[in-house]
Image (cartoon, rainbow, N blue to C red):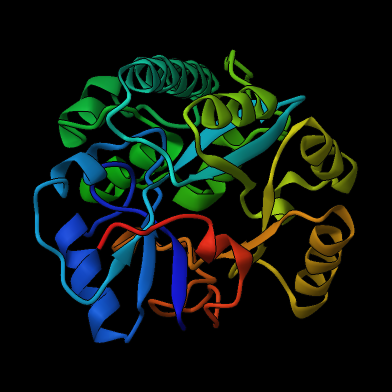
Length: 278
């Protein structure tokens, strides 16, 4: 793979540090990466004064939102991580996400799904700027916590995934807001893993609103879905992107290896938008 543009670090819900991701990219022969932590630019700030040889890094982010009970994630490429207004907005996004996670955590507790303590979730995720359902699940895993008759990922899907009947919507940021936030920062907003929106009309509406790209290549996408999203990109004249959505030891089951998905050629227009950070 030439470029893997969807990678997470310990600054959101991944288990690799930024430097470990760079080492992985070099080991797998990947020339271009983008670190796209959820609602955080901390990884880019940590690397700001670090000499990096042999890898080009596109500064990126993944804004996590919901719209009409649909999970909508928007990737941002070529962002400015140092922009103060952008950083303040990210703080608000993180607080919003943590609030929504807490609402759904307490909802599950009230329904006697588990008796785990929120304080323990925070304790086991010390230093995180935001707490998501994944952080809840990983805290339970760390304590060896089990629920009779329900696996942890089943619990996650039922109580922390927008669109399911048990999920309580608490977010005030939408996918449309995410597009606007990234464009105001000077970045390129790209719809992440569009399959997980489960509504191609919404995908097209996000493009009409101003999304400038779509993640065609993703481990969740079948061959037919890759073809469909590529056609949408070509029809609407937006950028094609792709990435593994790597989370290290927190990977989803469909992720089999580093560099599984991405852009296999420098010819993709998204890669030539502006100078990379060397």
